Length: 161
Image 1 (cartoon, rainbow, N blue to C red):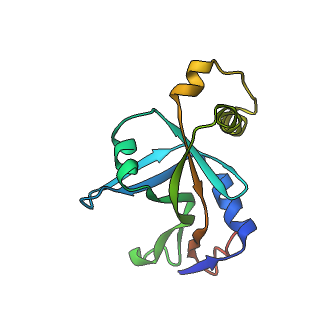
Image 2 (tube, helix red, strand yellow):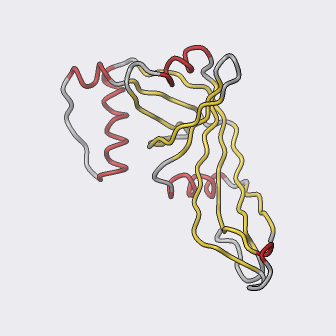
């Protein structure tokens, strides 16, 4: 099995869009790691998240806004030989991205971003009560550094791009 590195931005964005959930990794100032699954929305090279205004993740991000985001699409078990355990692998495509969290505070922009989420997951846009907009924390992460790899590629399972 081999690993293929993908560098085309369109391929990378297709992998991200195929995922419903990503994992964000944070490091507290004492180097304690903290990883969470989150839903997300993307627009123009920026990933958006939303959360409560407070909590452990917000406390960590206030001290260290740098995060690592992993998007992964796993589609099947692959093998080179049915009787050789080490020839088995998962065919998967993943994107790892690094960035810094910045919070959106403009209420109109927060509404627009929430509708990006809702359109992604429901196909619809919504109206929001003012307290809902004020009480949600919107995170923005510009995806400037990315890595995309496809694993579990063999002659029996050519890569998907």
